[in-house]
Image (cartoon, rainbow over all chains, first blue to last red; front, side):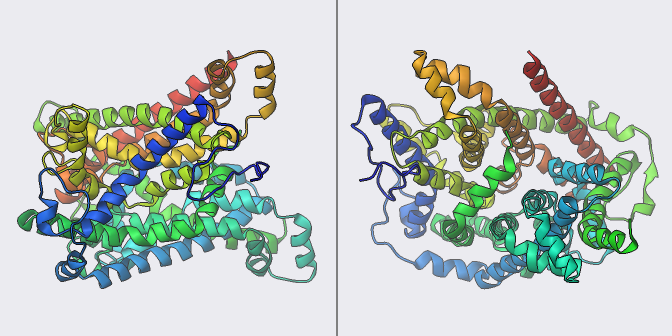
Length: 293
Length: 296
């Protein structure tokens, strides 16, 4: 085995590179403990979704389903409209993401490559909104969306989130690294600014765009407070995360923990699958956008 | 500045600035304005009636409105402090585990840790409410294996808030671990090599090199952790409804209940303004504290 690779990625095994010492054994043990503690709740969720209702009520708890079944998943579909909720979530997450990508690319480009009066102040004011918890603006925002006649609709969930400061910040960071020569050459060729942005600059920051897309998608797939507030009662429009809470109130009567776990598993799958495929982008973008030492 | 240049600036900025202006800045100013009004959320803004600081004396007053708000404020502060006190040390420890080069598996650990951050909070809350279940839950079962008695977790006023802190830490610590790793990679290896030559032991290297050079990362992490902590909502809305006996009533839940569900928009806005001002004070204090340490 070559010990040369700096990233000692050996999928699936924790192996020792040199002759193991006592300290190495301790480190390996700690890593294993953290790994198990981190993965345990989700494993429990999936295992419980395959149990029967009686098994989830057992004392002491049974860890493994005796005869794993998909029964709970079938029942979930009887309580909430899974397909419709997943579709609503997908619409909310993907339309919002598309909007964020476009607005962030445009504003990020302006802040990275244009010079205009008040640029730094405007940028600082936008960045400050990153530190504003959504609850601070929730009450008037709810009213404003009401004025626009968008209450109880997916459009009302989506519209206020089509631009955000984090996206602008991320795009500015990365677009600043695109060589000016590239942009000037295109200008000489007579390309419009929008064309330069989307045809020349954007492909040069593709990894950052992928990261932002994933962040935005997962964030808005998972978001709960705002859709709950806007959609009040209109269950046709509920995203899956809100439909889940209806499973719980159903569950209070019938005590079918397996149902709740099956529903939770369904809601968790899309963000986790996306993450599994693209986790490298996520992590890299945090590393490069988060802290500049 | 040519006209077409100015036009390009406008074209590029208008969508983002317009949206953030209408849906963040305007509501923020409205929150401040509404905090001085008597206003029902179910009516238009034009029905608001100026009442000065009455909302504020109400929410800090001796009536049940004041008692509930102050309780929610204290609960949120407690929740925030506990979250940070757990998240920061754990993320440094986990960051060191991932970053060390003696034992492989760091990348796997980082991936699994970070994956919990992708899980919707609502699912986290659902799963943990079952893990915490006093009789059928595996946590009390495992405590039993090591000789500890069963805990009431979410069902007792003395442990409910801590239980929510723990599930929040579980979800978030991976994100902060990645931030710490980013900070660690920026510390030059040569510092450690020089220290090793000078005979510094690992613990001395940690306190003399690692911690001081992580200071900025830790400050940034603390700010993010505070902002995240005051947003806790799902576990409370879904599982505890603020109880038992108000022990998990936190600000995001309480402000929404007052301002949206009870439609007391003025009172809710006064609470939101109090939260915003408190955050500003805390964050500025943190930065001032960090700057003073930098100068020493």
